Length: 112
Image (spheres, rainbow, N blue to C red):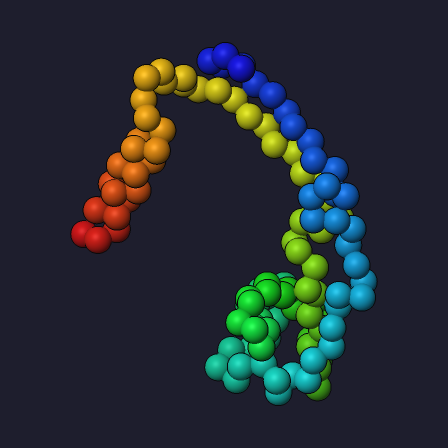
């Protein structure tokens, strides 16, 4: 690609996050959730497995006794489209050292 050239890349759902799976909706007792925050439809939670893996879950329904969680990836069932535009091409730079210095700049900014 050249400077100012644009491309659109489409990744079909089967090659991205797969199909949406109804069986990944799970009911849990409302009292199994943390007590410090009222569960609301659309809220995102992070669940931890016994092995320590973290899984995002979206609340899709709430009643007095239970909460329904959707464990599908938010992009499951969707094609993904990337629109890419080359804005600059730099020659002769070591990308790894350039990346490191960018990280260092971010760390300096964040530490102030």
